[in-house]
Length: 384
Ligand SMILES: *Cc1c(COP(=O)(O)O)cnc(C)c1O
Image (cartoon, rainbow, N blue to C red; front, side, top):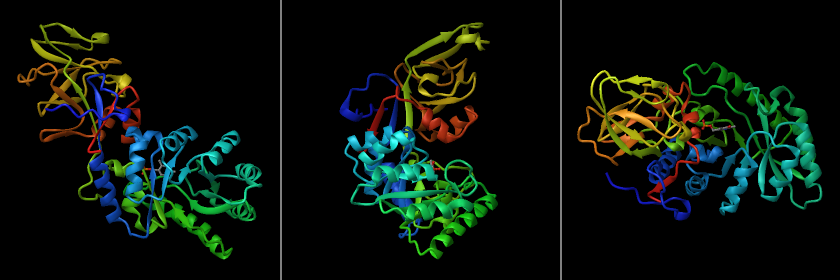
């Protein structure tokens, strides 16, 4: 088990024995496979919100652009400014809703806003009135998610307003699926037909819009009839499927692994207890290892549940998860030594702990596990 080459952003040394590994070769390959899966005429919008689901938005943005993405999509102005300051010059689409006081920053940093309602459209007009070139915007249409966007039945008036403004240019029109990756597609089809009504309205008004986009990863996989001009995908390029039942693309593989090392090895005597709340009591002599990773790093806060990989074998967690440590039983892995590598998520030998396995422990979904892996874990980039 070799040390990873330290390739943290800024080349800071790895200052702890737990880290996230990001395989950029896998990210490149996943984008290549996705490009082969969709029609060539369908453009990519690479969704890199929340630091690319903890993979690192700057590194992911560079690869997304190399793969031909036309936009990077983000949510907070903060993360957009960080990408701009790292030299990413691609168009950036801002999902969700901005406050009026955030809009000047969007203009300053050349961020493309989604328009959800008349009020923010008017504020953008006020800010752009004196510019020589029209500012591109994407109209967000709510077709049933009931989150952001103008209700599909009310889109006409907002389209008229935006298109009547010389300082705005309707570059995109978009919607978002509430359920695209499950077997039952009936609501997705209903949403799509509502969106089609809006697209037809645009045609009647003789308004051509460059980017009509609807699909997330689930939609890309399962709803080719909704691909339109572009797909907005975040999870799939990271090598993770949004559900168990959505279609598969042969060769897609996870980009992220989470690793740690055996910081302590100890022997428990019969009746010794382990950890806060004394949630584990040894019924006989056991050999255990302490791993320096905990719920403070995003590991699910479970008790006597879950496994890690050591020397290619599964070691079960015992006791509770602390903020900075977990304990595993290695009685059945006698070859394990102090400072051996342990895999929290990812492959070791012929076995793998998937993000979905961790999501089950957390009673949640893969997105939540990934975004829960927070800044305290250094990231190491492989195959840069
Ligand atoms: C997060 C998000 C996406 C990407 O979804 P994935 O399932 O990660 O592909 C697309 N569109 C919107 C509006 C989003 O918020």
